[in-house]
Image (cartoon, rainbow, N blue to C red):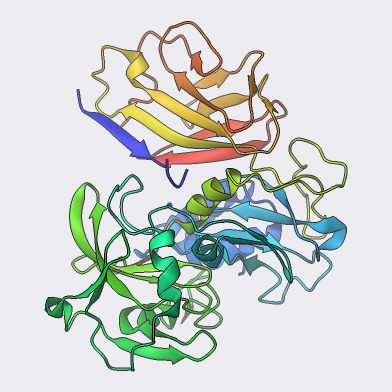
Length: 428
């Protein structure tokens, strides 16, 4: 049996499509229903629509699809004290002022998630922050890498001096924060663009990505970003080399933390993928879920309704609700025990979560429905494909053979009793 495991634990990955081809158009029409707001769909489509449709081969800017439905998170300066957000592998889209101009490039904003995890300061208003400790979550490589650097590793490096433009980048960092010099890295990357706002210098490989042009939705070749810092924000550390585990193998990766994203450079990766954006959206959701951010004082349903237009304001509680944090599947379908396949779900809200009637389903039509069940605060439940006796921490699907045994792309989705998407977990 080839038993494969996909980990997401410890983290717990502007115009409508037209003229790129029928396959790309079909991809967008399928995905559009998943977006919390039409403006979110347009923002995603501009850069990731061509990737999704196969028109280009390059790293995702947001991710293949939304990872949640519409969520309302507390933000003091938004109408009603909450704003509409939706999480993707790479980031979070935000709609703070639904009465604004939808054609404004900053109508949809891109959260300062990396900055928050680096400092521990969660932004709940224009000038209001809640203080926590930096995230002990790996910033690059395999999500269960036990030795790669974390946001907490990079936190004290915010104060390191900037490299002069043209200087070879040879500094290395380990998980425990030890900085050293490796002259063998000279010639691979160099300091390029000094940013006075944060007093750090962007590496040349990252600056080339931030200022690059490529195919966008509609088929034109344009700058991928409205400004070099639109997607990333300003750099908040220098770039450092580190040994991280990538697909189970130790590799040297250059890492730089920006306000909104983490960028990595992996020598030897194929064109279009040497520079990649880290899975900051996934990492942040899990980190914030366990911080127990207090809800807003407004009346709130367990899951806020999905807005139907860009003028519908978000209302209700910050609902990360639940997260799928681990999927174990039998990659070659040879398992004799369906209980080798599991899905782990954690409570991401600040209250007990009634999951009665919720469903877990894959894209091939398999559906599991939860009976009467409540997941406590900070609780987690493991769903086993096979048979067994349900308990407070274990549920059993009752299958006699594996369900998650395919080797092609798959997504497991979690929906509440009304059918609202709570979380989606693509694998392998």
